[in-house]
Amino acid sequence: MTGKERYEQINIPSGLSGVIQQARQRARNQKRKKMMIWRSSSLVAACAAVMITANVPGVAKALSDVPVIGSVVKILQVGGGGERTDGVSVTTTKESDTLNINFQIDGEQITSAPSYTVDHKEGPNRLIFTFNGVRHLDYDKLEKDIKALKNVKDVYQNIILDDSAIGFVVELKDDVDYSVSEYQQPGYIQLKLFSDGKTTQSHELFFVRSEDMEQGEALAMLAEQYSADGSSVVQTQNGKFTVVMGTFENSADADKHLKEFTDREDYSEPLHVDSWMSNENPQ
Image 1 (cartoon, rainbow, N blue to C red):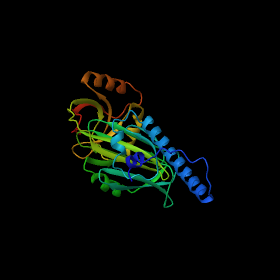
Image 2: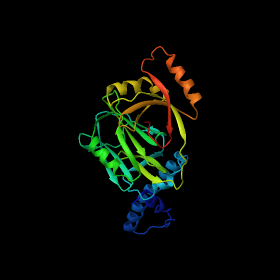
Image 3: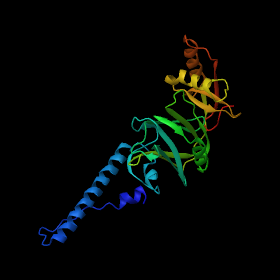
């Protein structure tokens, strides 16, 4: 049963008979009351989820045609959630245009998702996932499952200098919207991709960026150095990677931002201003 179907099948309880003459009927009614309380609680939870995520354009789309296990905690496009934990293993399963990110400890699925963040950036259109308290990721399975989604252009790891954190980047095709749903009991994250029904005009964006680098510790160190400046790692068209900061509409603003970096005492890695289209990777 999907989340939308479960929501639509919630019934409002009708009035009960004032006099119950048989114990058997009383037992039936008590059982019915319990079911109604459970359904009413589900309705409250569903309404709360909609209130929390009213700013997400695709909430209705996110709740439709999605197999639901557990209780929805929140639906978002950027932000985070989960609970602090450690020793978690991450696996994935794919269904149509939906990816489930599952979490286990000692082979048992946990009740809540670990602490996580989701960010969205352009140049190219991409989602950045980061999970904390995680010790193992079946990346080969994750890459296979994500690349099998019809609205995905590419996926790659985001190396983090913390052995209890993992990250990966999902590049989306043009005119694709998304939702990220967090569930409890069991705890998992569900990524749903769908066409937004609009044609987005690509536009030129300006960035402060590093030179091309291989994926590895040096790249991760540079990204961490500028993490407070909103740094992110982007794959270039030649298959290498670069650290980028800012998303500017003109070169003057990007040049001003670069000047701030070069004036810092800790500035060492050569940075420069570059531009490319919002739906493309840097050269």
